[in-house]
Length: 437
Image (cartoon, rainbow, N blue to C red):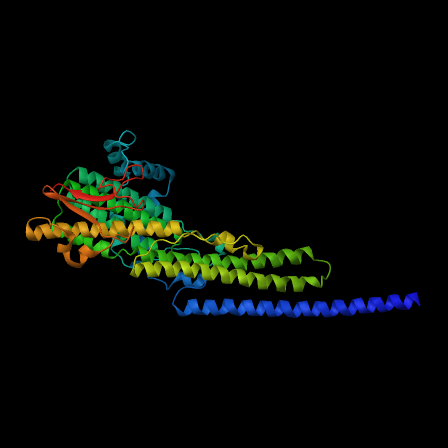
C-alpha cells in the first residue's frame, strides 16, 4: 500500500514537472519572440532612415585607387609610422600647445624636426585635394578585432602641419601658413569617414589645432582676400555635428555586434561544458538567455538613438548638453553597461569645436569687411546673418569689440565664464581671435 502511494506521488511529481517545464518553455519562447520582434522592428526603423545597421554596411562602396585619398595618405603614413616620428610629433605637440613650451622645444628644434619630414607635406596636400576617402578598416572581422589604425597617424600629420604653420607664421610666410592651415581643416572630412567616437575626437582635435594656427596668424598680419577665400572654403566643408552623428552610428553598429559575439561565445561554452551528456535544461536556458539578451539590445539601441537625436536637434537649435544617464547595473543589461558611451563629453567637445569653427568664420568675415570698407565694423550686426551666428558653447552671441585699429572677438568657452577676452591658460579663459591691425 505504501508502495502504491509512493508510485502515485512520483506520477504526480512527474506530471507537475512536465506541465511546469512545458509552461516555462512556452513562456520563454513567447518572451524571446516578443523581445526579438521589438529588436527587429527597431533595426528596420534604423535601416529605413539610411543609417548603417551591420558591419558590412560600414564598408561602403569601393572607391577606385586613383580617386581614394586613403591610398595617398598611406604613402605619408609610411614616412611617419615609426617610433622616431611618434617622438617628433610628441615634441611638436608641446611646441604648438597654447601653453608656452619654448623651454622644452625651441623654434630651432622644431625647425630641425620638421626638416626631417619635408617629404610628407606634398603627399598630404595631394590627399586633401581628393574628395573621396576610404581607409582599409577590417569590418569583415569580429567587432572586437576591428582597428582604426589610421586615426593616430592622421593626428600625427595634423600635428606636423600645425607646427609647420606656426613656423611659417613666425617667419612672415603668410601664404604658406594659410596653405598649411587649409590642409589641417581639409583632413577633417577624411578623418570622419567610417570612424568611431575616437575618430570624432581626432576631428575635434584637428579643428582646435587649425583654429590655434589661424588665431596666431591673424594676430601677426591681416590676411589677403585670396587667403580668406581659401580658408572660408575649407571651413565650410567641416561639419562637426555631422561628424558626431556619423561616429555615434558607427559606434552603435560595432557595439551592437558585441551582443551576437557574446551569445555565440556563451553557446559555445555551454555546449563544451555539456559534452558527453544531454542536459534537458540547456535549450530552456539558452531560450531564456536569448530573450534577456534581446531586451538588453533594445535598451542599447534606444539609448544610442537618443544620443543621435540629441546631436541632430542641437544642429538645428542650440540646447544645453544633457547630463549623462548611467546605464542600470542589472544583469539583464550586462552588455549595455559595458558598451554604452557616456556621451556628454563628446557633445561638449563638439560644441567647443563648432564654436571654434564659427568664430574662425566670423574672424575671416571681419577681415573681408575691412578689405571692403577700410575698417572693421562697429558691431557684428554689420556682417548680416554671419553676425547673428550663436556660440555653440552657450547658445549666445559672440563677444566683439573694437580695440584701436583692430578688434577682439571671443567665445566664453565651455566653462561658461566671461573672462573679458582673456586667452585660455591652463584650461581657463576664453577662445579668442584678435588682431591689432
